[in-house]
Image 1: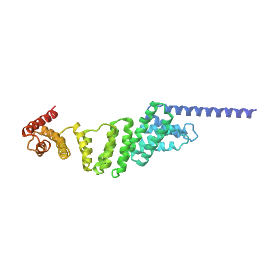
Image 2: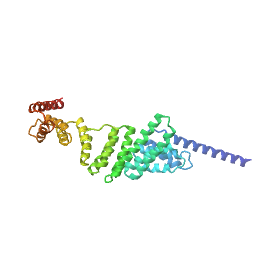
Image 3: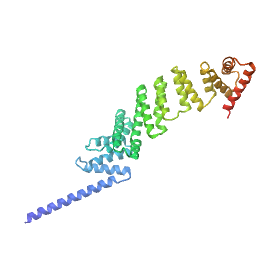
Image 4: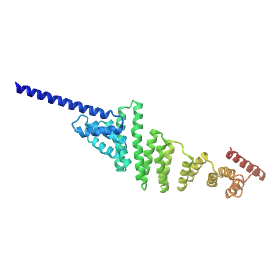
Length: 335
């Protein structure tokens, strides 16, 4: 009887100790995940990890998930990579958790330049996983928008940055960078998102990859209106490609946004053979800017007006019309 009593007491003490340990573990876990200060939270999570890290622990997945997210919040990118990769090895991770992990790893590998290819791969996993999750929320516009803005667009920007960096001597990668940048812009409508596409255009143009550069800039302009500087750059690209019609089209667009003597002279000179009537208007604008009757372009203006466009008019009509042309130009330029 005494032996039975001792065994019973021992069992009760063991059970009490187990309950006390379980309660202590639960308190430690709750204190860690409810902590609002990220630095303190990371320390508490690491303490829990040191004490209870076990694949059989019910908190195992969420421990590493929290370690990954918290270290990333603190910009401890090496730790983010370590914990993130460990988390992905745990079975039964839901897609919504994978989405956060993929984006964190894509960012961390990118920021540290540790492995840009891996960063781009994780960014692609973000995009594909988000597309799968979007199918489950097809009728929820807010959920779809959040998925695009919080995950797809950032992932596309990461890829755009990487392909731009890797594509300095690779036109195909530069075009790909521009495509990713434009795709992200279609989602977030943030002008800064297009910086990668614009940089790709500049690199292509400087490398004399004119067709690729023109395609990139045309794609940008399908998303938003171009600037005078962009139109001018595109016009010069087409001029280099010996596509005078396109060059004139974009020089005119640039001029409509930012008129100048140089641009007017350029257009007048380009149009002198194909459309002299239009050329004299731009050359008259150039005179309105400069008031210089000794320039070569003013002499060209006189030649086109008196000897080409209105060669059949009387001298008096020519003089009257020429004066009216110059006055009309001044009224356009001096507003």
